[in-house]
Length: 295
Image (cartoon, rainbow, N blue to C red; front, side):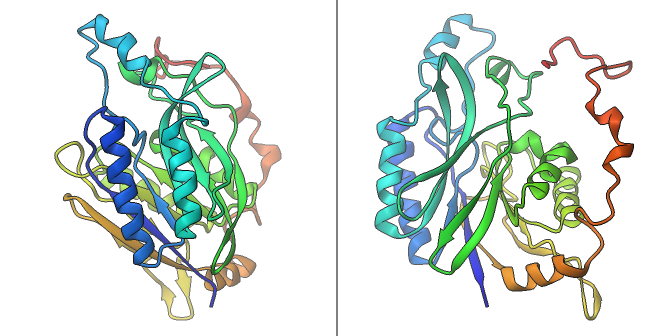
């Protein structure tokens, strides 16, 4: 059996203190490795704990912008070294500065310490003062991740991305078997249901890490993408946290998932893309016009 274990790091941050956040991240990655993880997944923007600046105090914005780091920073390279030491992939999140732009990103670091891709959040929360100053990413990525238990095709989306079916659909079309989802928001029944739907409709495994109480409400969650077996309908839920700080093990049977994808009807088998031309339109009509929305 080809089995992949993702550890969801549902951990609190020390606000914008990057040194303390780095030290805690290292501690929990080491614990994840001891538990047999193939991949350790952080919640969104873990270098600053998804801590916003105060929009009512404009003077706090620039110091917050100055917290952005690049891929050559000590914060990132430390986790590259750690991944190689632990023989474990790490999905590391941070506020990135790149060519004069800011991005909310996740870098997938493989067990050899190499960055396979750095995905910048496409669906930024433009209605939120903090994310309004962050630039949207341009592309979704899928890479072949080499683990000690075999290879798996991995993609990523971040938080608000999951609320748009196009995100997971594009990743599926690019070959993703597993989609990693760093998160930072209240995960209530509707968002959790959306996430389940993304797994069901694309026949992909999903793993999401969120911040616990008091910042958000935990509920880090994983689905295996296998909605039916020989006995009929089954629950795709693999793991779900509560609201407290925790690390959660989500184990995925890739052989079972791959067999399921060979014969079931979802995914890309019966889609009719020629009928979906309106999806490419840039036009926005009432009641969905929002002045803050970027294109």
